[in-house]
Length: 125
Image (tube, rainbow, N blue to C red; front, side, top):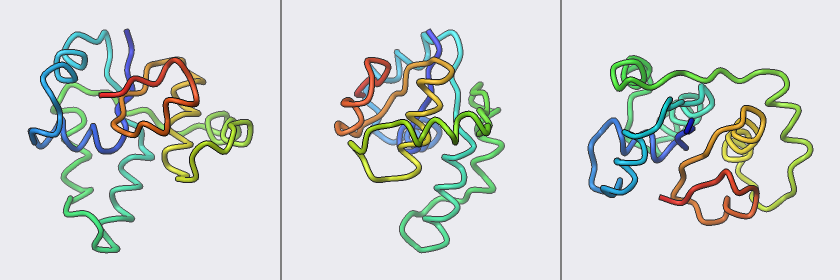
């Protein structure tokens, strides 16, 4: 199974906070490949700049590779796919992650229950 981590799950995975429960950790550890979107790093950079999150995006870039994760770049087809998604969720970063998960395809691991409406590929952790 290939998985894409949403932004919060990525942060929880690399910082070791208890918000990422053991079943979610096992799911990540058992995956064939684990991806982190470049959109997540962009989201963290924006929120850190606004003082809404205490995370250094410059430190998170090497944490992707150090964790054994793979960076998933945002392609034009990912961006275009957002236009075809229903408006279940208004956050542009979450909508882009959904578009990436559906396009690739891969399971999106998230703690955001609202994203379940998009696809059976969304897994709540």
